[in-house]
Image 1 (cartoon, rainbow, N blue to C red):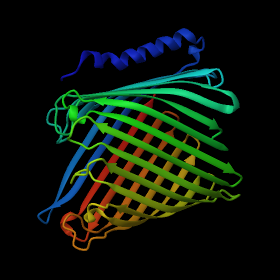
Image 2 (cartoon, one colour):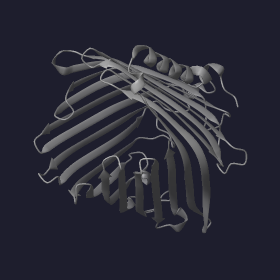
Image 3 (cartoon, rainbow, N blue to C red):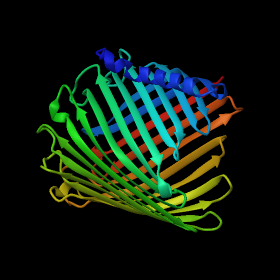
Length: 418
């Protein structure tokens, strides 16, 4: 497996340094909690589609056993966490390590650091058609302090390294680094505002055409008064590619929500989302689009631990250059949430709907019905057994049968804590 020695030691060295630093500066390490778990899990990916009127499916089942070791400590001015997860399965072998460190206070100065590393190896004969061994490492550092009148200022930097065993059209090595400055004002439970900006660079050694310079700006605000609250967020992401393979572009995201909560806990939320792509030079692959969606979400508590919700949604994709891309989609998200402290939680959503492409004779896309289903939850039994479950099923039933498609994901695990 082709790996660079420097990249292989980057994150483990940082994790070891964080642990040594924690032990050196904190006399409270004896209060740290060490938790170990033996994990038995199952992951499944099912992709169904149609070729020449014949139903076809690609199915991947993975069974694995693993170890999950977690060390953490929390106090007023010092927090640290170290975790290592190893999985050995019939399809792949996965090693994951992460560390987090926080020292100081917002008023006197706060240092926060996080780092993680994932090494994934696909076993010989694996059912993953495009399996490609890789190493991925991420690191984050924030230095901040609260100034007068509750204004918090922080410098934030992030690094990401990815190395693949083989170079393909979709898998390529790269190094990414960005740094920036952020401002926060107020309290999130009342009036809150934040503004941040960062500049970054991604370098791809095997293909300079995929390297780019980046500018990212993010603004968020929240206003809460009595039973009403209003939230607004916006981000602008500019990527200037060095080559001619991809055009430089802007990606602008905007979201707004207004929530009214009644005395008994029932609430209504009006939401709006927008995603805009603008390319300097349009091609048949990369072209300008603007997606808009609005919804009205109602939530009704039926007990102290359970609530029902419903949200009608209407979305539309605008595309000036290609009429085939334009559509209107209407769905209704129906579901329930169950929460019981740390013992268990469960969230289920069923979202039926319909997508209508506006071009009558569309040779690329066809109208279809959607029936999205998602289920996720976790429960702890007898304090020593943890159960987790995630299910996602997204079938599309098209007016043109040859376009029928569905994707199903299942992930379940049992963890024995000791």
